[in-house]
Image (cartoon, rainbow, N blue to C red; front, side):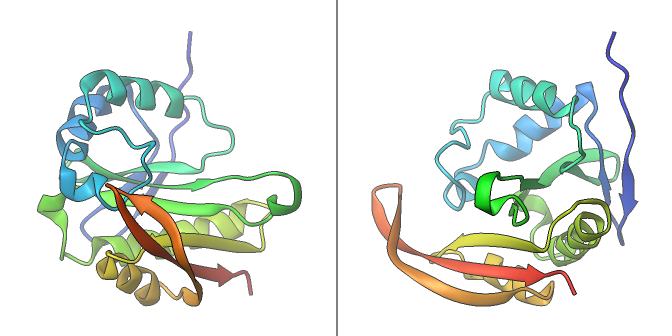
Length: 177
């Protein structure tokens, strides 16, 4: 028997919350979009099948600590925000990742969600920095991080390949004060 722990952080017009087994259908619907896949790592499946959604949700049901949240709008799981905890010399500097269903773009949800995630992480985790790498063809995501208080620290020239195109990676970070 799995006991689901509940976590909820309220934003304006959305909630960051822990995962529920029935999130798979909504996540699959919103994630199966080339406009989302085009700005994420290749490990993000495309097409985003129901099998992929169920696998992801199942993995997220047993988090300890909580580092990955559903973005819920009007009772529906429409996106994800989370930290990738690292080890060794990077153990106090997790990576931030996020995506939001395209129908919800331009509503100001992501800058707020990032701020809430940063506050949660610095309050509850033993970390000193949160870092994000943004593909050079995604200026909207760069703006999200800037609105949330992140600083661009550098550009890794020709650092990544996405969809057969060589791109720069823009490195953003926020430090624990």
